[in-house]
Length: 188
Length: 188
Image 1 (spheres, each protein chain N blue to C red):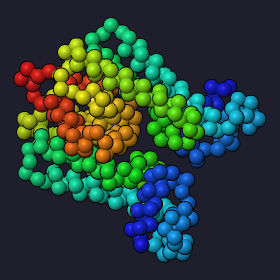
Image 2 (image 1 turned 90 degrees about the vertical axis):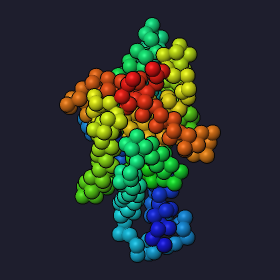
Image 3 (image 1 turned 90 degrees about the horizontal axis):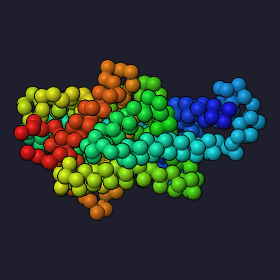
Image 4 (image 1 turned 60 degrees about the vertical axis):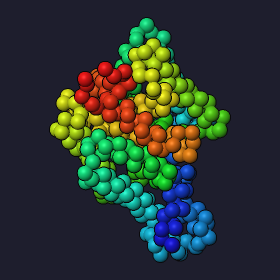
């Protein structure tokens, strides 16, 4: 039941917004009473916290799996971009909530979620730096700035890309990675 | 006075959110009465509409200026990325409102603003296609997908980049354009 409440909240917060969704809206959708909601959660904010934590924990786990593999840095980059784009199909509403509603978390939770979000960025920076150190990428790159470049191009696809359309997730990831890797490679 | 009300609303909507800001908050900040507000605007939504229109009209005007110049396509790309990043300093709150609060516009206004937003994307697509046709860029690029790649990497910087820090706007634009152009170029 707890995870059903979270799933329904993800879809309502994602479509209408956190402020615009009441606990009544959530329980109505599930045919529950408010009592059941309060058995599992103190308030609406607690659901929001868990949505944020699940979203970023899941991404970090998938990212770790790639980082710890024995692939080359170029291959890891391809896997990472593919993973981020594939997640749109399953997590577009969670992502919208993550990008848009973080300011509704309290200070303590906000700082916790931000740390994990920053870790996701730092891992990409490390991947770029490893690629430079192993001479797969150019020497003159700024790994920190490039990590935001990669986050931007991949995260932005949550706002416009429709899975199941003319271009598949795999194709989009291939197009993006090809452009990115040629940009990162040593010339000549 | 009208433009002061808009400026104050941009800062309040941007920091707190549209739903979270009342007309009372706006007039309090300016030391006005609600009567003055209603002399210029029917309601809070009308301010939101004008913020959206000003933001996208201004971007389109700057983009047009670049598109119609006599620069090469590569140079235009550099100018475009620089322009988008330079706008962070003056328009970060407007951009946050544009990315986050569009769903609070009514159907008619939403469709009007979306058309202009789509035009901004189509112009980038055209720039990439011109670069392909003039053999400045590789033949095998999909101009439509690449336009979203560019929008993503530039727009994402509104979420993390702090003007006035260690990396200047010009430097960030140069780093991003160098990576992008090497990715778009013909090899060899």
